[in-house]
Amino acid sequence: MEDCRPIDDQKSIVDKAIADYEAQQLPPLKKELDALVDKKNKAAAEYEKLYDGRKKRWCEQNEKIERLHTSLKGMFPKWKDLIQSCACPARAEIDAQEAAIAKRRKAAKGGNERKRDAAKATADETKLYLDTLTANGTKADAALTAVDKAVVDVQKLLQGTAPVTALYPFWFEVLPAHGSLTPEGLEARMDFAKNQAPKDLCKVSVVAGKAEEEGEEEGEEEGAQTVEDHEQTQPPPPDAETLPHAVPWLVKPESYGHELDCAWMRFSIAKVDYAATIRKFEDWPDDFPGSEKRLIGAKKLLSENIAACLSASVTPKPC
Image (cartoon, rainbow, N blue to C red; front, side, top):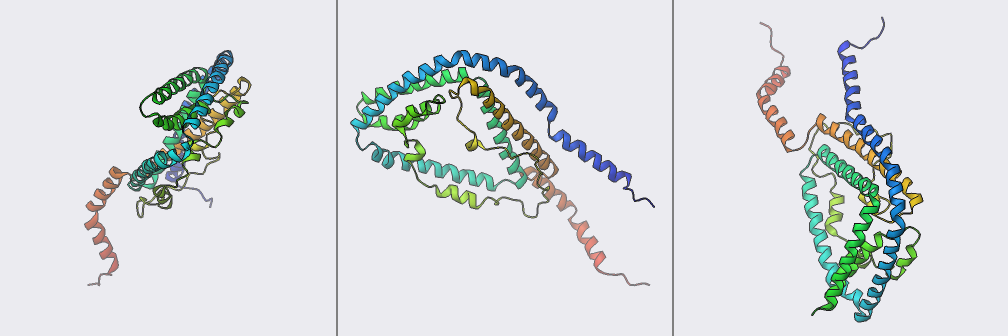
């Protein structure tokens, strides 16, 4: 006799295949891709027209910031000690508190809920990156203007009653923002501030952050029937820290199209991954409402399940 699956089983297989396809949200993704294909050439042409002016403006700004950098180091020879004794401990405390709060929030979530939220954060981050890069010329102009204003604010502090207070905004606001805009190929222009990024000045480990990593599995619902991990056929999407460069930035016009291609690829992978985590969460919602709903259902069946177990445990004697 031919070995055939029951019709109900076959229907379940088809239903699952349809659900898996729908979960990937490919039609909306294709619509976004079609729109970006049309937008890419226009964006590249517009950026090429704006690039030389933005690059010139950055170079002029860089000369001004380098002179200000020299002045600050001259006025405060122990500038690094001042920053490391005042700014770094205060920032480390904030980092520790943020890490502790993040750990508590994470511990309160179920495994599927946590993966869904993390995937959404990645998808949102890669989408913002793509949108910012698409409008790179305009965004870079706004960023240069913001740096100009920050430089003026630092200069005002230097002319005030407590000029030492200019150290923090210069090294933690002006330099990072200006440096992230550095035109491709002109990185050497920032050598005057080499190894002076906030992460280099404040090399303080955050204990709470380490504790969060060690307790990564906390908050998983004990005994939860979580769906098996999604088998990805593509590399996992990057988190914010693995994106190639902060945006906006003055990438060369000849490299701009390729950067857009890569930004789209990261976003599309992240979006498909997010859709998969939504499907897993919907199959087994392990947030508080979902867990409470299952508990209510289990309580309703409590007496019935106990009675069934007792009945199956004892064989009734025949009359």
